[in-house]
Amino acid sequence: MEVIDSHVHIGLNKFFKTKNDFPYNLENDFHDYLNLFRTSKFSKACILPIPDQDVDKIESHEYLKEATDYSNGQFLPICGIDESLANNICGDFVGCKLHRVYDDIPISKLQIALKILEYYHVPLIIHAAFKNKVQQIRALLKIAPKLVIILAHMGRGHIYTSEGVLENLKALESNSNVYFETSTVGNSETIEKACDIIGSERIMFGSDYPFGKIFSGKSYNYVEELDVVLNARITDSQKRDVLYGTANHVFQCSRYSDFVTQYQSRYESDMKNLLQNLTSQNRKFLALDEKHKIIQTCMKQCKHIFAIIHDGKFAGFMRESGRPNGTSLLEELVISPEYRGIGLSRLAIKFFKHIFPHHFAKSNSQNFAINHVLESEGYIRDDGKRIFHWEYQRKENV
Image 1 (tube, rainbow, N blue to C red):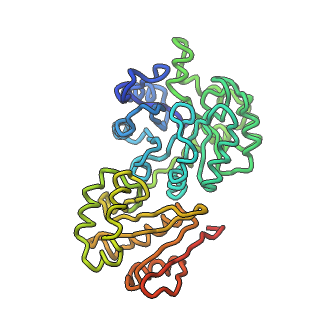
Image 2 (image 1 turned 135 degrees about the vertical axis):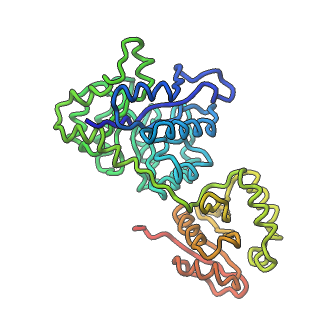
Image 3 (image 1 turned 90 degrees about the horizontal axis):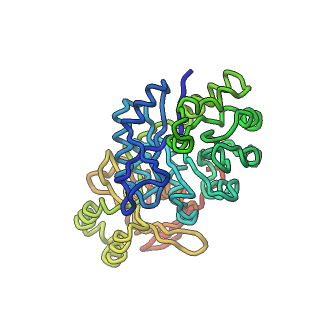
């Protein structure tokens, strides 16, 4: 029977910036795990970074990519949340992990990240904080209603128990884009009841390796993690869903040659070159002389700017500014001359509409190219003579 382990942590102690080692001695060299994985005859494994705020995420992500390449496609890499999120999920990573205990990010700072995951159709695995787990899931869905969410450990309480699992299942039964992962759930009866409540197609097997090894010590047997599913009184078809089918359906690699990502310091040189080499007409259209300082500040803070990427290269940017009542203003949209005419402005506008559903835009009335894109994307403008002000409000069924 084919098996995907949808929850395996991979990482090294040296990725810590100040600490000496991972919590609970979680270091897991991918070479060692790959040997165990192949001995166990599993089909694939989702490999996740070790969760901790002090881990260097760049090193951690590079290590996961190295492991994936070394495994010849048997590993499916899952990234953490940082400013490179869109770069990662549009490239090598098939999912994202949020750990609300060891690497907590306030939900108020997650809005753009959640919208990015939703826009690119990439699932989020969440280890919820100890209390109010259902409310945490609902808070995420309020921001990104169509986001695929996987509740790690089925939201259980203590390790190798089923505390709270059935309550979570019943509360989230109607949310068809919420899935449940079985790692360190205590008994097969819970899997049986879960299949009755939400169906096997929303449940996926996971081990949370190497947590179990650390918890059980020398008596630990990796393959025995499967017993919670294999011993459940469910049909063979349901077992195939839980052990392989659900994860195989959810974790699909979708690479994008053109995408929009949050601005990062790596793009500073490209940004400066683009701004310096614009024609006088373009500078006039964008009022860049008046906005130079604020753009520099946004670049320094890596806030309010999004980079547009074409075939791995910086192709332009757009900048927004927050406005009252949760709205946003699209300040500039700039495509490098060598990349114009291939649809990147429209790509950026579609992304922007998703990230900021309620927003405005403004443009120079003589900037016919961007005015055409805005109008064709459903914006309505005023009757300004020099500056057009455009309004767009996302339709509920979009």
